[in-house]
Amino acid sequence: MVTAQAPSILIVDDTPNNIRVLFDILDRAGFNLAVVKSGEMALEKLPLIQPDLILLDIMMPGMDGFETCRRLKADPTSKDIPIIFMTVLSDLESKVKGLQMGAVDYITKPIQVEEVMARVNVHLALRTAQIQLMNEVSERRQAEERLKQTLQELQKTQTQLIQSEKMSALGQLVAGVAHEINNPVNFIGGNLSHAREYTQDLLNLVQLYEEHYPQPVPEVLAEIEAMEWDFLREDLPKLINSMQVGVDRLQQILLSLRIFSRTDETEMKLADLHQGLDSTLMILGYRLKAHSERPAIDIIKKYGNLPLVECYSGQLNQVFMNILSNAIDGLEQAIHSHKKFAPAITIQTEAVEGDRVAIRIIDNGWGIPPEVQKRIFEPFFTTKPVDKGTGLGLAISYQIVAEKHQGSLQCVSELGQGSEFAILIPLQQG
Ligand SMILES: Nc1ncnc2c1ncn2[C@@H]1O[C@H](COP(=O)(O)OP(=O)(O)OP(=O)(O)O)[C@@H](O)[C@H]1O
Ligand SMILES: [Mg+2]
Image (cartoon, rainbow, N blue to C red; front, top):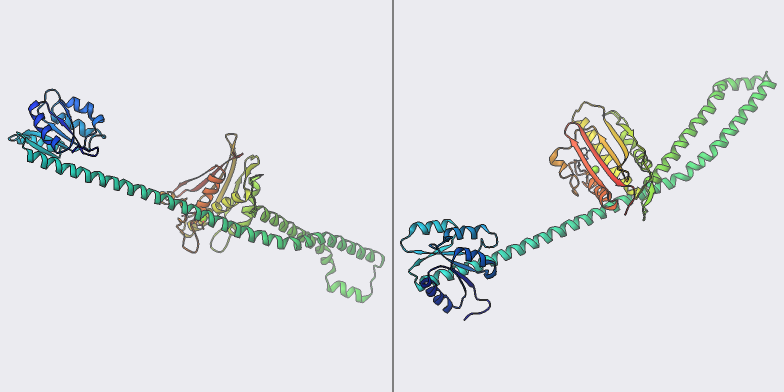
């Protein structure tokens, strides 16, 4: 019985007798049948018929069966349809050639009912199984793809979470310390100017005494000598001046800490990126200084003329911090493995193309090997020992620059020469 789901077979043959016999056998078996009389017609009608199987005669006028087969196999839309050749019993050469060209089987003429049915049924069953398998494979592939995407999403969320935790922990600590130190520092700073004034008054008073009583009693004279009065009079104002320098420096540091720890920014504000860079450098100052194992790391500032940039400045400071820390790590590593050089980090800024700013942080360490370079922005990728690196610095920086600020973060590095990280940020968002 012919049903809508019955497999369809295309018969390609020019001999009326053959067609009749085949038609009878296959029609009785309930298949959907289509007949064409040439290879050309077969190719033309194929998209309409979309058969599950093709019975193809070899000897036909015009395009023969081999050529028809070659073309069917060359077309991606028909290459998977099984083709059974029809050839005379004795023609071994044609059978071999047909199979070589991609046919799945052959039927010998004169046509035998049992042979036709056996071969057609086998290949239709195989075809059904093949289609099922292909569907399953493609479903599995889709599932895998979905899984991969979900995993990537998860990693991204994790990175963001860790980033915000890291940021707020560091930011809160810095802000807390800054707050605690702020009052005592202001207290010292405020009193220092009075102390300077009072000291000056006292010194003036002593001077007056000296002028009016040039001959002090022996007891006073002994005390003047014991306390090294001449030295004290010279040194006291200097001492107060250097205390003032110290307090000024402390107040500068506090300002930097406050600029660095702007963790509560909920909206973008116009910011001076040089201020951000300087406050970050200040915080990293202790890592730049010389120590027993290496000389100081030189900071070469090549600041251009930057307009204010609309941004989350606290987050950008975090990016500067991550990239500068990596550069310092890289330089220390290079010194450790005996590179002979004067370690330096160059910070270059410029306005580009009228609507963007570029900040380049360049070190003269070993550089990053290409296989590492490919992975540096991956979350959790690190070449450092477990207790030294989490592998999140650059992943976080990338997110902040690319996603939060619609900018770009690129790394250029040549082995032996050093590394450059270029941050590009639009002046305005949206
Ligand atoms: N300036 C640099 N010189 C040499 N290697 C670098 C430099 N910057 C980054 N790298 C390489 O990129 C890797 C990833 O850097 P990333 O900042 O993401 O993680 P990390 O520094 O290892 O860990 P952390 O999360 O503590 O920052 C580093 O482990 C290092 O191998
Ligand atoms: Mg890092």
